[in-house]
Image 1 (cartoon, one colour):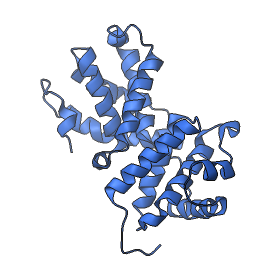
Image 2: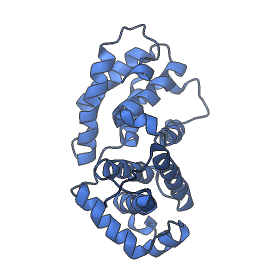
Image 3: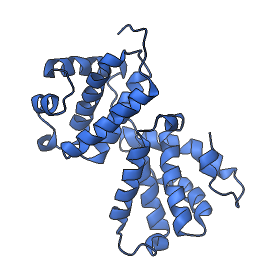
Image 4: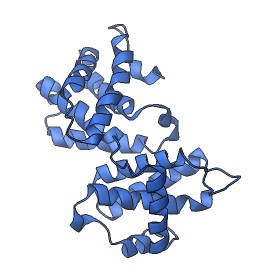
Length: 236
């Protein structure tokens, strides 16, 4: 798609926010939105697209993500999605854009998202420190994870955070939350990174990629002084 005008960071953020609204409108899983955002960013990193195509690219990524994550009965009907999303493109245009996206991404949709890594880090943190949620008696682990998930999905609509790997963003979310709840938050951050490296299941491609992403933040965190305060906010 030849173009002399690229999609701006603010336009990217706007379309991510639009996809977030569609996630609630069609009652889809957070994982669908997270994967759609990841596919969109991966695609835009490989092509120069004119802003006029952005809504079609985004809705196509959204539909691909829904077909990858959701159960068959939860996947929106394409004609309904095209109509009710007000994306401005037809069903056939979405299908044609899907082929372009799949070709550019080498048909690889099983990418680790920040949300995948958040699930791993949160599960390890709660199992390692059961007292983590003692100060939040009204929240179950799943409810606490839902709160962090909303915060993470909000961060995904911020282009400034694209400079960080998905695992780094998820780790920052968990680390900052632990800092509010327990005194030994930094040692737990290092500990859960070690456990994540050892325990991440190799059964799926996405989990394998998330495991490899764990390596980078572990190297950074392990080199920090024990008394460091909020180290991840300044990590590049």
